[in-house]
Length: 111
Length: 113
Image 1 (cartoon, helix red, strand yellow):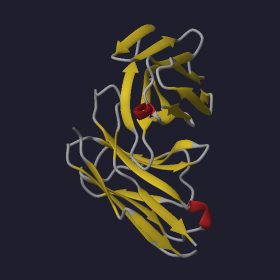
Image 2 (tube, each protein chain N blue to C red):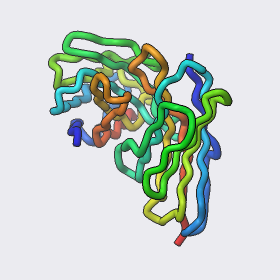
Image 3 (tube, chains in turn cyan, brown):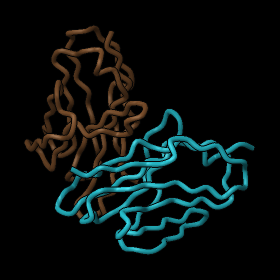
Image 4 (cartoon, rainbow over the protein chains, first blue to last red):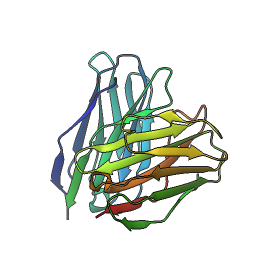
């Protein structure tokens, strides 16, 4: 059974800072790796994904994946107060249509 | 963008009561999911389905039934609600070959007194 862990549980950063969120997984056969963002009182919404080792950048957001170390991360450059939200990582295993979610990192960006 | 709707948005019931949560998606997605979200636990999968009449057991199924009546509609049933089922419930859908991206509804806040 896939085990997905996130760290830290919560994070407070000043506006303009670079923020790093971490996710570890247990199944080395995992295929797709997602970050979802959930603003307070809203539904989770897919932010970005990666399926091969390396980095993927979209605007201020970068995902880094290292399958050998069972780790992927989300980096936010020039953090904004509007980035304040719960960030959920999710992993899809081979042969399954399930996404296994981590418990989330609550990010607060202070103006 | 994929559209998933849920009803009701809020529900209060008493212990032992019957509750049905409804979900509809209008994007012809094959897969639909029911999750519960509790502080410190992220999203936990209750049941999911890959088409009308199909039901798959998720990770936390105890106390829940589900039924997929059409490709669009997926229902979650709590036949003897307990206070431990007080939670925020999300429905989601996804399509085959979409890199597993799931689209979520707005959620239903359920309180069992």
